[in-house]
Image (cartoon, rainbow over all chains, first blue to last red; front, side, top):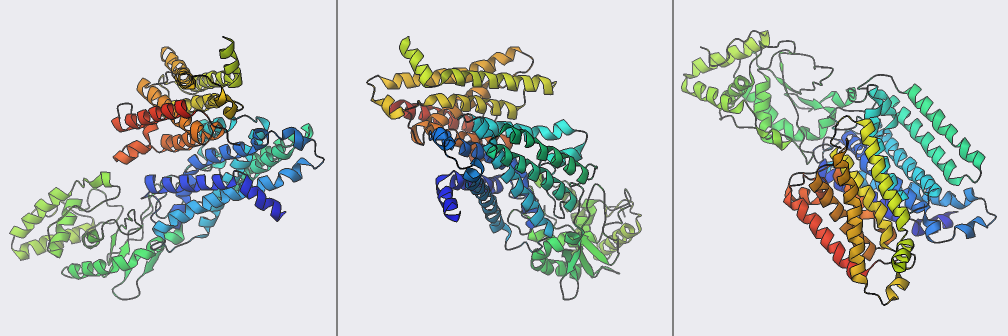
Length: 443
Length: 194
């Protein structure tokens, strides 16, 4: 068997398929999604799943192309005349093509991991399940392609199938609206886009998708090996059962994956020395970059009475809004990961952390300090003029409050030190008490 | 007349014609049913052009290209005529939809993508063989249609299929592929590789 497998690996479309998937996947990762997967392993796995939009149709086409090999070589009748059962003859081909897509998808993952291997540390179990479902999707696609190629052994089958496959993937969310969870069952890419830093895919969603894809794969294999009409009709059974089971397993709620947050990834991990600097577990690899400027920020803040003594990452997640516990002795800042897996702008950590001390509790809406005031106060404490931070993505580089912050900061510089100090202290006190009225410019 | 009939039969032209017209009709029907908008979505337009080009790719080679090449006929003009007619077979049905309720627009994009993709597939037919000629157009176009990159210039060139019709970089890329494919295919003709 292994000898046959070796021959089949060399003589089938396997090598080309693996190469195609790996190359297409790596190009997509590096050209279109640089900033999407730089935060960690989970983001890489989810971004890879997003690109199944391209890889899945390609796998369909590769399978169909492979299945038309006998006809292209003109040996269909010859093989039909041998007594060996079709199932045992085509089994090595099925295995080879599965190996090919497996290798291609893994190679894509390895190519992506080169970018983040230095900074990503947190590797959750869901990374494995999300990747496994992606692999299963590709295997199902390549086998489905082989079944289609066997049924319609023409040259045009493969490209037409790829176009149809892509059309199907694009249509699923529209066709199942307003039941978004249904699209989540049948499409391996739906709701995988733009994974944020604490994103995860709940285990039940992965199981449901795996059930559906496995059923699809079984049906494809049956269709490909069947040499009787009865077996071909029976092939419908697994796909129907799988669909029913997958629908039962999937929780019937929308935004099931989009709203999912991995609490472990979000937990704070602290630097061992004092004063304490803590970031979420997913950003642990960035802690060495953050600790230095964060401690400088605490030193600058020490000019204030009752200054915070600890720095935490702001791990707020939105829709539904979940805030970290509010403490007045903690200053919080958001960690923005750039394309290379490192901080977008290491120079912005210092002002961000200092400005965090002028934030208000989450439920305090229009009585909190404005951004311009926060940054002006922060820069007054640091002793440098406010500058626009680099942001990710670059299009958002227009930070609206910077010009105003510079103006307020210049105002503070012209005042006597005691007056400026008093205003900054007042801003901090009012922000904590949720009673800001006017800000720094108000006497 | 006999020659043309035999040629078309050997190139499986009737089947390809049925598939390409059928493909266009299918896409038109799908859009008419699925959407109220009169202008067909750009991704759908690109995919339709790709489908029609893939359907006509089959006609670029015959059952025995080496044998065919030995015939002492002036092949280059015939091959050029073949590609030009294939181009018209992609463009004309799609332009005809402009008069209907599901319009495959913009015209510039249809013409540019049809020419570029046909050139690319002809280039493939003359180098890696007709059977494999669709590999590159398919993979490239799927990726470009889903993830078009309007910036920077390299992005516009690499995803030329999905750029706005007034993009010079995309137009030039398509023109280069079209002319390159036309010249290479006319000079070399299709090759057969199993």
